[in-house]
Length: 313
Length: 313
Image 1 (cartoon, rainbow over the protein chains, first blue to last red):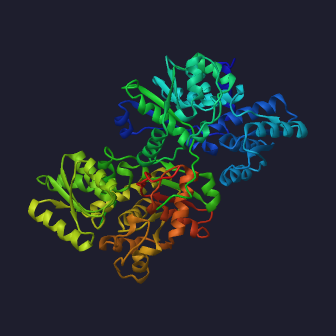
Image 2: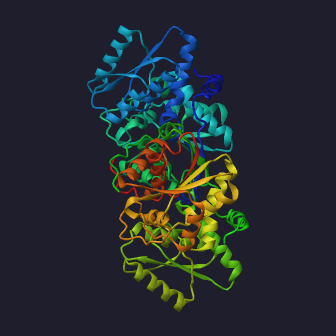
Image 3: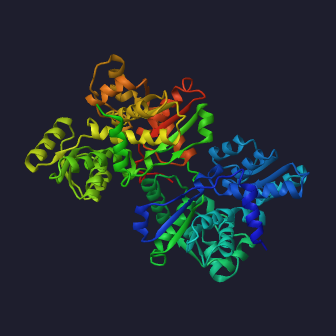
């Protein structure tokens, strides 16, 4: 059970390394949504995503609990890979990231840029887990899971903690949900630090394992997820699911078109870059605007890692 | 001659209507440029561009000087059109915007969205000026020029004023240059409020009338400008040119590739949306990085109006 104190400690110890991200508002968006909306900009976070919070917290706790460990590892083709590579570099640890051999060059380069080692494997979950197991066994690396981990969750919770410290009158918080690290952390922060704050999530209809699991109260894995919100293809973790069942009020699914429309709206009107996974939470709010009418709603923009090199002028 | 007091008054009277925009910094950009760089985010300004400052100032002065005028007009297909339409709506004035008949629908819709009237004309400067003259004569509308106007310049100067108030140790300021409203205003603000602050501009090589005029000390019009920085195709104004000759230290030209590279860098690394015209100033700094090495440099990101509806996911 993650305690209130664990989240406060996480916030305190990661703060020299991560940004206290800005909260943006937009009069046009408030008109569109008929609500008072506060965007927590984790797209401006270190490595461009909230993942820096959890990764740094897990690494700092590791340094205390297992001071002899000098090598960490994970499997990820996304923001957790970059976050762990970045965090390890900050703390003088070695990091090995297992990535599928079809991961985009830009993502590989980001990980290499932070000085981590990449081991490629076939693009299946089985190959990733198997390859990671070998790294852990043969090299004594410590595995840090992207979301199914108490330290990762307590770190992710610090984003909502900052929202509630800055705007205590918030009534609802909406996040995207993939593996559930951000959603479970946010739900715990709302439970411990909010006054009747309810927490909701947006999820792509094309990767709706959290939606199905939540309403069936039984954990289903993600089956052939196929969405532009590439950060949300992962299956919900067990620790995450338990917290979500207890402290989350609803999960809404959105279509690919709704995700794209929300993303383009934010780019064009708010002039900030968010990745499709962030747009999922925005799209969920717009889809359920009746439910949030005239409420003070915080939306966590989870990340902003988008490739623009192919943009047409 | 625009005085120090005019700029301070402009700042005071427009402040209830426009944003005091944020100043962003980026450790990655500082590493790239080997300088301390401060980005003044006019992309977050009302209507998505610094133009809101000048337009609002010109309109507020008009209300005082000619209280009987209820109708303003301009010709523009860009950010000045939106700024004047927006400002007029704020102050309860009618606005007519002469736009070329090939202007993008998104830009027409933005102007219509602020309640202004559009009159279309052929896409030539002659047709635009002729059509505007008719509106002024037949409807008694008051013409507000996009940049060759003291009130517009004093309004544009308030962005640099805010930079110098917030970071008095700034040594250089770089802006893009098109018609010269932002550059001349910035140069005056640096002259009046800075301590030995030098001002530079970036200009597209494909629309280099300011560069040519500045070094020849003779005003040349823009000939067949063809650049993705669509806000910078206009010819330098006479009032602007006189100020620029006196108070600007240098103009650098950049290629289309350099503009695109700078724009994509800012989108991908800083997670903010800037339009190609803003990227011109960023590209100029990177091109002349030896000159700005270890300096405290402010870059004015003039606007962020980019259409993303065709973005590929």
